[in-house]
Length: 355
Image (cartoon, rainbow, N blue to C red; front, side, top):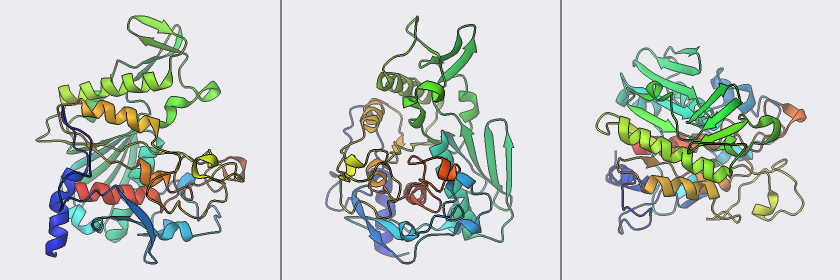
């Protein structure tokens, strides 16, 4: 490994928004040798992607855009390039050796599933001859490499806080977490929640909200989201030993349902998008949920590393399944991401942090 790559690796943890009380979120003030891995642009790279979906038979149908008939493939050929350095190359064999006898868990909604499946495929591609097992027990899926005694787990938990069925119906409790025991004892935890907080109508998974000793038919969703994040942050403060467990938050994965955000007056959704937004910042501006998330993380005393994926993902309006997801032509998915695709970059950033 060269001197430059060692220097980059040594700086990575500084570059992942490790937040403590009174810390100000900034990746641009680490001195001349600092490198903000999240400020950059997408560049064309003919060597991409890391794998083909056919390399990984376990990839969910909803993410396998090429198998579902997506006719273009240029969206697979873009690499994230930070302005001040290079993102360390993903080395799956090294990852497996380094995390031998470790347990890693992704906790969150289907965007967390998106990232988990990406990582399992990137690692499988690195050691295609290595045996693996894939099992599901309840709401937890486990992908295991027996030769390395490494378990990569995914726990489906879209809100992190509780939704309880009682005589009123389905009640959201933004100040309660009962599933936290499932998250204990891991070497690495990667949390995520956002996608489901804005659902209404038939897709809304609760009937009432209980908070502060009162029951509401509904409350402002951004307020509810922040209250839930505060509850989660308190769980981390009370239950995580940073010497034993490294905690990440995936950040906010954006959708692309409003073409006006990237200046397209003709499109109606992400359908037919084949190119990234080739600029530094997303024309639609910061994501409001990301602002809320960072505000909560700033107040925490224990270290949580934010994978600040929002802006770089906002620039990838071309990366969604659109017509080529699980629903095919009957549905439009501008929320999740094709695999191979953008979550591979999220995992390159995660790999950099864990190196």
